[in-house]
Length: 62
Ligand SMILES: [Zn+2]
Image (cartoon, rainbow, N blue to C red; front, side):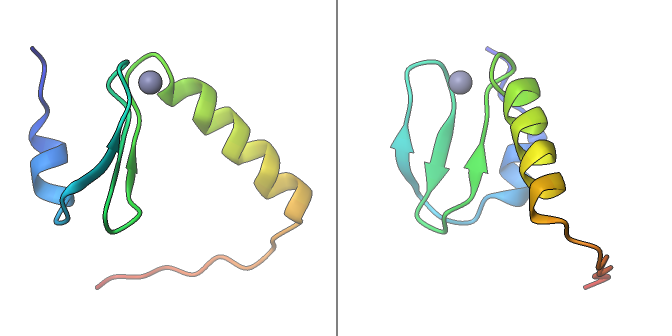
């Protein structure tokens, strides 16, 4: 399997919901999408951001 180091580095909470395709949500409400759904979700999020008309960009360096 292709378990990523990325996931290990970024996820602190336990998995709350795991879908059969590989997507999951943690108890911290962090979502990790599988390779199949990630591009689709990225597009959906982008379109939602456009609809929200968010103009502020905040850079966090913490
Ligand atoms: Zn998926």
